[in-house]
Image 1: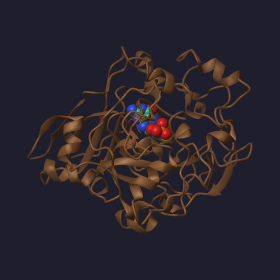
Image 2 (image 1 turned 180 degrees about the vertical axis):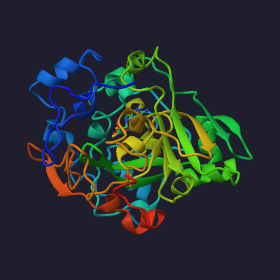
Image 3 (image 1 turned 135 degrees about the vertical axis):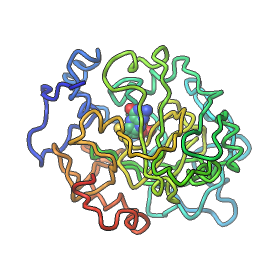
Image 4 (image 1 turned 120 degrees about the vertical axis):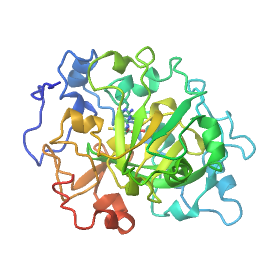
Length: 370
Ligand code: MTE
């Protein structure tokens, strides 16, 4: 279905910075498709204008493993007692998702001391999850009104020798538990965060599935439950949300299934209980709340590509040299980075993971395969 692309505040020139909220893409919907839309356009305070106090100061949260007990130090910096991760720091609003695998083990290979993590509060309150609304502040309240993510079934299917359906906690256990990795996160809307993810490498799951030689791509399908998800009761995207990777991308060591952030079960609004994480790609590739992982032969069309292929491609690799048709991708606003507009920094090729992933795209024209 063709969407209205001439919204009231569509950006016209490349060098314009995208607006500081999710309405960049909400604006491509018709003004009547979501009741909050009007509010988003006239409000005076932006989502990003969170108080500086919402940011975890570097002195309290420095991503360096302690030689004695990295986990203990890490939890202490977050204000958790060493004994009690479970529940103690969860607010009453946070409903539990997958709890298997906690406490997680820090993976020192993915813990760059130069990266300062965005505060938990910001990571869990500044979200894109259109199933629960199009404003950044919508998913937190809307995804925590009785939507249940535990127990949660996920189906592994398609061109594989070992198809199975499994409960999310059992899957984590089968994967040998969870580890923590700290990755950069870059949204196509030109903002960024640094997030400590807990979960397991996607390659482990693929090994268990045992793909047939014909399998070349893997799709990730989000839940579909219009009763729980107000966004799905409206026609603002083609539901359910679908994302996909080439099989070699999915098998890359960086590709990860997150079941937690900050050493805690992943909040609903961040995609509980299972969510894809591919740090060299734009955030829209990170399919949330996955119910089906399907191995297929042909390159599928992902949700945002179906919506507007000229703006959102299949690959979605972070690339400062290939602009979005309506804004530059050369730099990004650091969420929680300080200052009234947030700190700005240059965007590195493949979001800083060039050394690890450039080989996947050798010989490809990245202006064509964006
Ligand atoms: N997954 C689903 N199912 N629905 C969505 O709307 N938004 C995507 C991605 N995954 C989205 C999704 C986009 S655009 C981004 S930037 C990230 O999730 C945001 O993840 P976060 O809210 O945890 O920061």
